[in-house]
Length: 213
Image 1 (cartoon, helix red, strand yellow):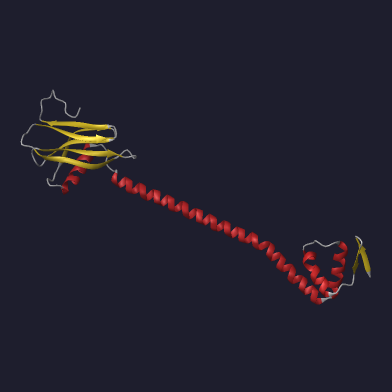
Image 2: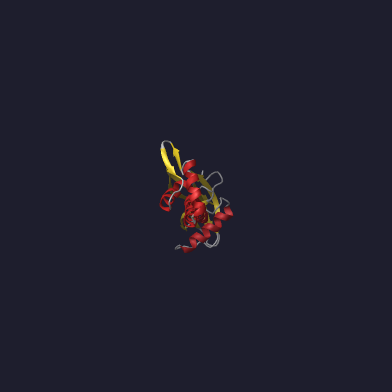
């Protein structure tokens, strides 16, 4: 039996080679109704072509779904990498801040400053056993503390601290030593971003004098 489609003659009784060549297009639904009918009639009576149809249908379905699965897998990998990168950045920021805070840890409280100066000067030539803050002055992010040693008469000095972004201070230097007199006026030069300054500190002075002003 023959059918005419668009001027072409299609044999309804197709052999296996022709059917097998048509199967990919048949599975993709690219063949005409007449061709479909001829292929289906052949498959219904040919076990070999029927088995091949099932195999090819499964392969084509797998090829269609595989890219979607692969895309989902790649998305999961990209998301995992993004999470890992963000986590590393956060941990680095937290560690950096903790390290920063361990340096800038002092407040402007005189007792806190006294303890800081006592610990800082314990490694120097003259050890301040018990620092006592006489006066403080802050200018341009620098805190200057004039102090004495309660355990060593006539030991005086200046300590310089820098202010951090956490509004606390880091002790960077201390200039101190013994003095031969019970009354003292001393000066200390320090630099800031805006220029050089001189701090003036005094102890046991006439009340009309105002050191560190």
